[in-house]
Structures are given as C-alpha cells and as structure tokens.
Length: 140
Image 1 (cartoon, rainbow, N blue to C red):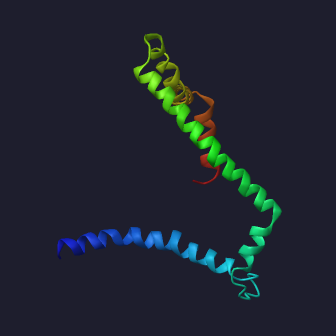
Image 2 (tube, rainbow, N blue to C red; image 1 turned 120 degrees about the horizontal axis):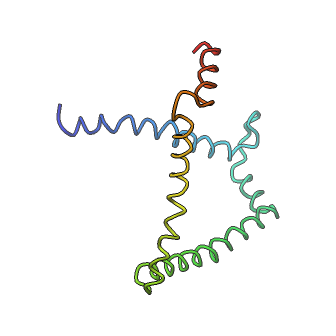
Image 3 (cartoon, one colour; image 1 turned 135 degrees about the horizontal axis):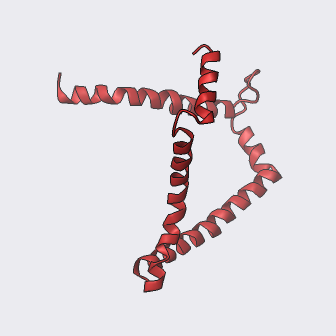
C-alpha cells in the first residue's frame, strides 16, 4: 500500500465521525428551518427567518448580544493584557502577586487529591466499605 493511501485510511474514521455528528445534523437543521412544521413538512423557504428577524424579543436579544461583543470583549482583552504585562514586566512587589493569580488554579486540584486520599487511605474508612456494599448488592 502506498503512503498516501495509508494516510487517507487513517483519516477515514475521523471524517466519518465528523460527517455523522456535525455535517448531517447541520444539514437537517437547515432543512427543518426551511419547512413550516416537522410533521406536515410544507416548504416555506426563508419565511421562518423573516418572522424571527421581525420578532421584537429576538431583536432585543440580538442588540444585547452585539453590545456585549462590542463593549465587553475589547475591555476584557485590554484589561487582561494590561494585567499580564504588569505581572511580567512590573515592579518587584507586583511580581510577588503572580502567586495570587496562580494559587486559585492549584488549590482545587490539591484539595481534591487530599480529599480522595483521605477517603481511600485505609480499609476502615466508610466510603470504600459503602461502595463495596453497593457493589455486592447490585450483583456486579
């Protein structure tokens, strides 16, 4: 077998998965958006889109979403860039605050590890015995 054929065969499962889980559902959604009812299936074309665009609640939601995108996203990017620059090239006492930004990412993982270690530390703890009781009574 040629190298190109082997590569195409390796890509085949991914392409099949993409077609099944993304492309086909997307085509179905487009089809359902062009009919009036899922049961009668009368073709109405772009009428559903026109009704949606004329809906006052949709217009309000669209306006709020656009405001959020136009105002909040640039402000968030500018603030995060400023904080990262200050932490990278800032004053000495500001460099010590890096720890304050990294600590929230470390604490949840460490606490979960400590909790599970204490739960499964020895055979006398309550949870493993309870799990074994459930396991045996379920017939597993």
